Image 1 (tube, protein in one colour):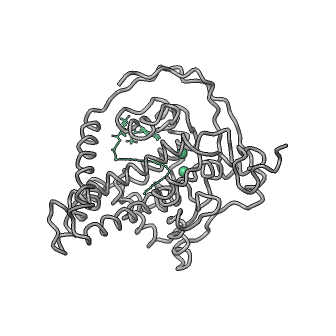
Image 2 (tube, helix red, strand yellow):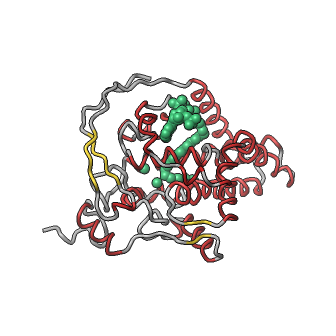
Image 3 (tube, protein in one colour):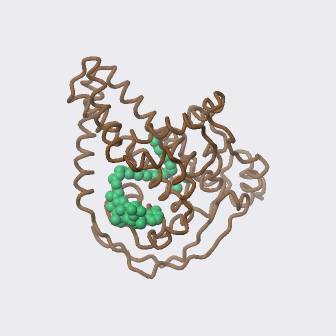
Length: 335
Ligand code: ST9
Ligand code: ZN
Ligand code: ZN
């Protein structure tokens, strides 16, 4: 892969924590002094090539050969592991947008381990960097480096030095204090293969499926699919769509992505108001299954202190920084 040219653009960092609520604080960040280099990690390149070949073959078995119960099980694993990322690693652990009692934290950590996107603590550390240093070299999947880099390329190369240099500015003490997450990280290399590959391959044999079909459909295809739709939030949802809440940042609203990522495609809203447990203004259930899940958990008392944003704050923000595409307030101030 060719080394990428150093960007000469002057970066603007928008911090959008709860503390800044309705004010986008813009801090100029100088361009990185170091020319970007690709230190390719060939082990990852080879593993991801084989994974995607296996996943493609698994998609054929999913559609044409596997027992219907196996295909339904694969979809159930997609939803469960997806929730482990959206309702778990993302909304609960990385953003603290709601609180969860022990049974829910355990359930979401199990779901999260099925997803194999590394331990919640590591995932959340990268994600907090992604929000704090969005679209700069300290953002692990800096989308200004293009679709390929933000989608999968960032997992194929060594991290930019800026990530390690600025990493200490991220406070992870809250998650490191959680015994459930500490347990997951400590035993990850045992728990992850079991949850992501071994059990999804074994369980379908209980209804007479072959190990071959079960492995390619419920392990490789399901895993590759969930990885790719997750990565779309880093790539497509930072590139193509409307910006009704803040036109000064790259993240966009994308309904097609939202549909496959259980409600995480309203990314312009999410980067503007990252503490909202809905990660969207409205949270229509069909496009936001994760909100439905959290609402059900709140009904049974496992989730509480759900954070959201008032209509008034959203309206002011839309009028101040939106691109005019908001269906309600978008065009109010236009001549
Ligand atoms: C995967 C993750 O796919 C996907 C995340 C997607 C996020 C999406 C977010 C979008 C919003 C949510 C939407 C969800 C939608 C879900 C829909 C579901 C239906 N801060 O990493 P190392 C330091 S994973 C501070 O080895 P290298 C630290 O000291 C796929 N410090 O860097 C660290 O040491 P330690 C499966 C940091 O050597 C040291 O650097 N997993 C930070 O450059 C070395 O760290 C894989 O494929 C930081 N953020 O290697 C593994 N980061 O950790 C892929 C690092 O001991 N990863 N440091 O503290 C790797 O192989 C390597 O990380 C590498 C870089 C080769 C990429
Ligand atoms: Zn983002
Ligand atoms: Zn986020």
